[in-house]
Image 1 (spheres, rainbow, N blue to C red):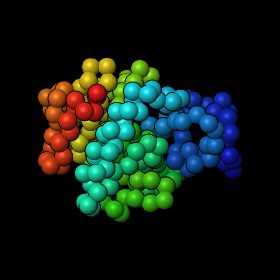
Image 2: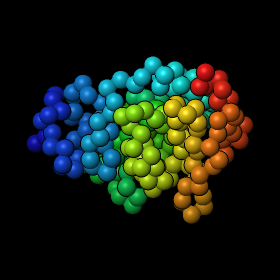
Image 3: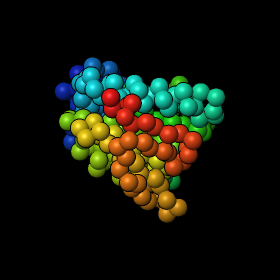
Image 4: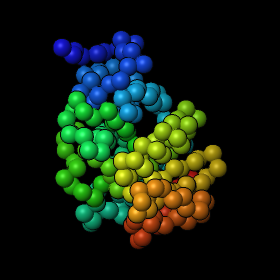
Amino acid sequence: MNSIVTDINELDLNRTYTYADYLLWHFKERVELIKGKIFKMSPAPSTRHQQIAGKLYLKIGNFFENHYCQAFFAPFDVRLPRKGQSVTDQKIYTVVQPDLCVICDESKLDDRGCLGAPDLMVEILSAGNSQKEKDNKFDLYQESGVREYWLVEPADNTLYAYVLNENGVYIGLKPATEKFRSTIFPDLEIDLGKIFN
């Protein structure tokens, strides 16, 4: 019988966990579960990270204000079930908390967050998470069918965007440093000078 875990040190980081396990974790550290493995998140994002996240959320949230899609910001659980698997808490091995996401299919939303791939995921890089975002999450979001994925790099004031093609493979767009227009939401244009300033 599983029980509440209040200290992350009680967990075996080499073990594979499910969303059912995740629901029992009541410790202060923020974690994500990627293919059953625990990934610790940065304790608290930097001021610059939060400034960029806030500006992006205001821009994206305002854009979708009178739209059927909805924007969400971390902490917000996105559960990504394996393709072809039955969807139960015991069968979900991935729970991520993107900095921002946009969900257009209302049926994916419930009281615990999002079940299934959002249309857009935005991750803002920081020293502690850049490898995870660039590697693990890129593959994960591609496999899960996230239609557009933005990686925001504060160190060089650049937005890197990837769009899922008809074969389910991400195609990288030209890195953006001034203005960026979403492929899947063509009316959504971001003035990066205002975001990074």
